[in-house]
Length: 301
Image (cartoon, rainbow, N blue to C red; front, side, top):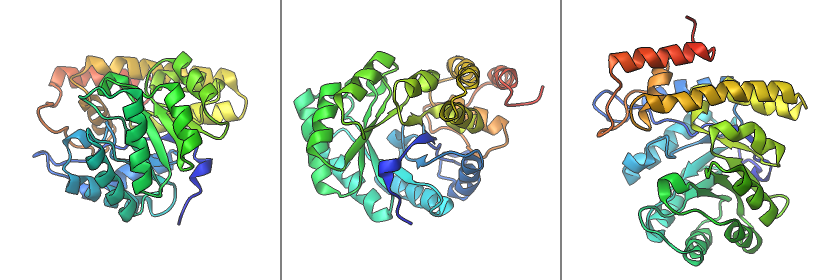
């Protein structure tokens, strides 16, 4: 089933990559993770991204993860593949492999480690767009990738490239999100990447969210979106407050991105460990994380 991703919207988990204790892929666990997300009502699935540990996967492993997600989703919602890289050459290769696998769209992170200019960022996306036919969402995450895609650059890309349809904005700045919305055509899709800003971003015109806590609290995140769409702002705000408590509490426990996998494991989901050098939580950290999940209503006391 091919999706009309011009209607892409809502809550999208950057799905974790399940792994065995030795750090190898545990793709047999992918259906369980996908069902947990779909049962909660998510509107699409995104993999591999930052929370999927894309940075730690080989090119072949990326395709294996995408294939496993596609098989588990089985056409029920769109599947978006992350295909960014440091070099344009590698990003094109990742993008073409994902297109051959059969995904519905690409989400492409800016180059990281290097610090390209806005003209170089424009050329990066333009070159990738010329090499694939899939819809493309840019991915601006200055905290992790150093550089961002400026609103004016996004507007230029959206106007010049018909299948450059949106962006994941992980700036964590509602003013930046608003500037992107103003700079781009009305049908351009802006997905907020900061979990604490889902509700306010929807209020200013965002299409939805791609947020790491969706893996841990999918019903909570979907609830924010559904309440907003129903015009129940009080409920949307209240649910956002609960999700924000979760998101702001998670970094107390270990190093990114282990918190999410550990929180999923406490809920009985087979996420497995994070690849080294990131280590599992200590027992005392895991107990405190459990207490956080209880406090926001994700586990019984």
